[in-house]
Image (cartoon, rainbow over all chains, first blue to last red; front, side, top):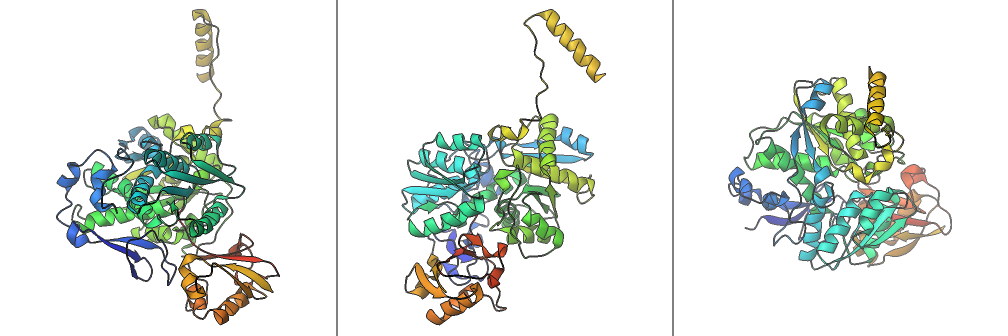
Length: 414
Length: 91
């Protein structure tokens, strides 16, 4: 099945042959994979998808992979959980959590994009993969490079959380800690990518890489029984995920797998790094970059490459956006853990906090269905909770000691 | 004011393949004027019809995004390094 037409500039529409390139030579617009939907229509059906593996590869026909999957065979198809306790707490009828904090193998949605990018790197004959990362991407690139027997160079800001550094080093990549912000790491990587013939997953492989995010959106719709929710709240860093979930929903419509699309896409960002939500609130398509200052380091991108498209996605779908303070982020993490037993990282706290504010402000009506995209695991960033969680009971190993402690606890809470 | 300008791959067909070129200008704006004199066609790639920097191009003076400085009016001095970098994805 010839399903791909190479690449196409998202801005001026110029065509390019499939290659490891990401920028339109003429207008600098981002290049995007061009699918032949006429070929895919009727071939990709609800039944063909259901017959696929329990992983993101059940949507392989809608991803830019032409040969066999090279790495990450078990990525994706994460749980979509009906979060009734959280809904009760927030006074809502229907909340779902799309839980990529348990995505195999590195516990974030980045496994989706990396599995596509590394497979594509092998297709193009590269022996080295690389990335600029705020942590989750580093973990995933290092892991999938190890699986694919490829060399890897991982560039991170030097002040990254220790958990994310260790969860990268364990796969034995070359880890380069750069004294600077993520945006500075990113700029450096753009120049390195120009000089060395490596597969930089988020630079020259960006058109393929970013398509992997669509699988998060496809899964939400399939798991809802091929229905679109009223609202999806998405954490934004570079702005790609929200854009690609929206693209996924529109593709399902194009292919006739769903009837109508009425979903509103909402962006969630930290107050200390929220340039996309600021665009939405000010209703302007001009991005003003910021210097990040937030505990949500995985979202700390002050100059998001897809900021413009993320803004357009919220606008086009009728959605909005909200900022969360560091305090609200921690409260969001604790709320999800307390109500649903799900421990997400700071980015998930941003999503929960932003959703709560959107609900309380009436932007998201309480009687409409809401999906929260939880994209990373809390065990990677325990530091953020260090000062908040210390109330455990310490006793000697005797029943009477426990009886006393229990009586004390009861008198405190009564 | 000779400054070093780093040219990204998509623009190198216009600079005869050069990745680094020398150019002059009191400000980023006048530097772009000099680039156009040396390599006709370059200006149209950097600026849109209204003369504004294209949405997906970032310019850095000594590693600092010019949007944190004085944008196109950012002053340049001898020995400065200017990088032209397309926007890239996050992670």
